[in-house]
Length: 131
Image 1 (cartoon, helix red, strand yellow):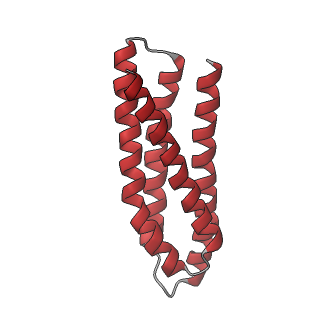
Image 2 (spheres, rainbow, N blue to C red):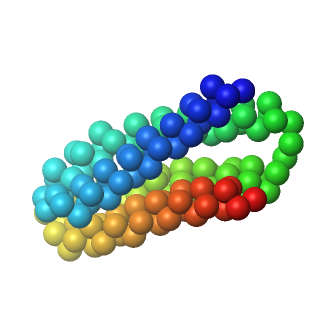
């Protein structure tokens, strides 16, 4: 049980690190093409990490045999993070290299998305410590 909890927690830290790296990339990288390539590389890693978080969380939840408020909160949070990242990727992939206005709009959109993702993860962590 302890190793499953540790794996879950370390994976969440890695998941947060991926989100922070993506937000840093959106803020620092000025070229849309460079940013799109970087985020396209990071997207499978993001989803893999989220899947591991969900999987290890499921193992911990079933092993504990108690369905708590924290578990009820973590399930929709994980699904929300999955969906919002898919929407971000879909918006990014249709932008062409000559569509400068859409590229600029994407930078603003991506900053909002990654800020929301980080806030959701931190909020779930805070709530899980309270309950």
